[in-house]
Structure formats: structure tokens, C-alpha cells
Length: 388
Ligand SMILES: Nc1ncnc2c1ncn2[C@@H]1O[C@H](COP(=O)(O)OP(=O)(O)O)[C@@H](O)[C@H]1O
Ligand SMILES: [Mg+2]
Image (cartoon, rainbow, N blue to C red):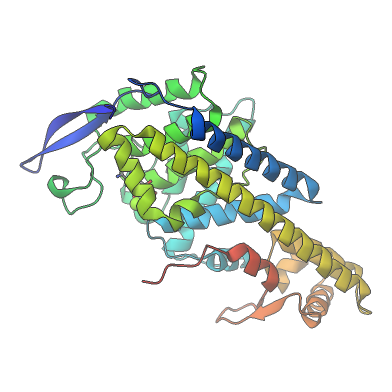
């Protein structure tokens, strides 16, 4: 049992509640334990990430996997707290030239914008550094124009919030009061830049819990906290591209994810959380390696199939090469993508359709859309909506 914070009494709507204010990282008294089985778990997770890195390097186009895996992460991270959009919804929306997104799809698109923005800033010499400001700007993009618009996009909350329950007094957890936030976020930012001898993967695990415990925003804390994992993996050079869709692991075991976050606060069990987190990194990295190989094998096989077909055209081959990063397409889209004419585009789609590589997707959409079915099948795993 370790003390990870203090409680302060807050009066909310006439009721007294105990809000939790976490101590600054790293864990102390006792210091975080990285020995024994935890050291092996860490080594296993690190090794799995290295294999994922190699899998990304071995394919002709790393962009395919960045495209696919970032979208998978975006969809699943959004689903964890109830967004009802699927991978297909997102891809269909992106395939349409002037489609209007429903709120749930918009949320996922915003997530993509937020990740793209944050990665871009970190890479640019004059971009924002790794900082709370960067996260706030990502949050602003995440919450733009959707349900969250009334929830102060890009701003640290100015009121007391709570997790679970109908009011703070019966909540599962009451995060720190707003006046504590500047100091808490300042400390977290300092920890991001501190040399403290902890392995970067361990630091990422610690940072995620701390961020969720601080719960700095009115909404979107889960998504920004998970986006931070993605950013740090890349920024701290554990992966050179955002290929780890860790949210899938949290989604699969959501109750355990929430329980362990809470356990850090309740009993100071940072190690229990870390074991779960490291196990997740290793599991998802292993799965992503298999998915990458499967997808690569599929595309290669389809290419062979196409090259062997008598009506294979240069345009059809070029279209096939585009499919992994545009798995749902419409004819006008193909025209733009391949910079060709409508008849040529239509013919190329027809060739791929005849070979069973793409299939028309049913729907009430104005432009017919075609999907790279087998590819989507592989990518979809885990992104289905839960039965309600
Ligand atoms: N007991 C807990 N302690 C700390 N954080 C928690 C707890 N339970 C859930 N969370 C985190 O809070 C997130 C939900 O907060 P919210 O602001 O609604 O985020 P989002 O809107 O992005 O889902 C969860 O996804 C999880 O990361
Ligand atoms: Mg929410």
C-alpha cells in the first residue's frame, strides 16, 4: 500500500465530496518496482515493439499500415467511451467527396485530425514541443464542432467533474478540483522532460494513469490520454510510426482498465497497472505484426491475381496499389486519385470487381462505392460495435 495522493473536501451543489489530488510522478515510498517478472514483461513488450517496427519496414509501403492502424486506433479509442461509429462508417465517409458526417463519425475524424496535428507539431523544428499546450491544442481539434463543443475545447476545466455516478457525491472517482490543475499539469509536463532513469515504456504507462487521474478536461480525457500514449511511443523512439493500436486492448478489457486506473489511486498499486499495460503493449504489438503480415500477403496475392488476368491494365494495377490506403472508393475518387478519365477509372474498378478484389457496397449513397472487402475483413477485427 502506497499513498499516491491526498484528498481535499470540495463542496459541490451543496454536498461535500472528497476530491483526489495525486502526488507528482514518479511513484515514491516505495519507488516503482521494475524487478523480477515485471522486468521480463518490460523486455517482452520492448521486443514485441521492435518486431512491429521491423514488420513495418519490410513492406513496400509503410504508409499502408500507418493509414490503417491509425484509423483503427481512432475508431476503437472513440468507441471505448461510447462513440457508435465503425471503421466502415469512417472509411465510407472519407471516400465520399462531399459527405456530411454524423456526430459519431465526426468524432473519429476529429481524432485523426488531432493525432495528425500533434505528430506534425512534434516533428516540425518550429512546432510545439511535447507539452500540455500541445495536448490542449490537440483537444481543441478533437472536440471541434461535435457534442463536445460546449465542453470548452482546448481548455482546462474550470469546474469540478466526476467519473461514474449521477453526481459527485455518488461518483466512482472525483478528480482534483480545478484550482489544483495548473500545478498538477505543470508537474506532469516536468515529468515528461525529466531524466529519471525509468524506461520510456514505463514512463508512458505512468503518464497515462496520471493524466486520467488529473482528468483536466470536461470531456475527451480518455481519448487525449490514449493519444498521448501514441505520441510518446513515437517521440521516445519506441516506434518510428504510430502502429500500435493499444486502445483495442483497453476496449477488450474495459472493466479491468478502469479498475486498475482506480486501484492506483485507491491503493497506490502502480505495479498492478504497469503489468496490465506492458502485457497490453506486447499483446497488441504481436497482433499488429500478424495483421501487417496478413495484409501484406493479401495484397501480394491480389496483385498476382491481377497481373495474371487478361484484362489487367496499367490503371487497374495502379488502382490496386492505392487500395490499401483507400480501401473504400467511388469512381469520382478514382478519377482524382489516378488522375484519369471517368471511363478509364470505371473500367479499372470493373476489372478489380470481376476478379472479386473489390465489391460494391450496398447503401443509399449517391455515388456507388466499392470496398476492398478482404482487406477490410482483416483490419476490422476488434473494431465492431459491442452488442448493446
Ligand atoms: N476510475 C478511473 N480513474 C481514472 N480514470 C478513469 C477511471 N475510469 C475511467 N477513467 C478514464 O476516463 C476516461 C473517460 O473520460 P472522458 O473525459 O469521458 O474521456 P472520453 O470522452 O475521451 O472518453 C476513460 O476512457 C478512462 O481513460
Ligand atoms: Mg466522454
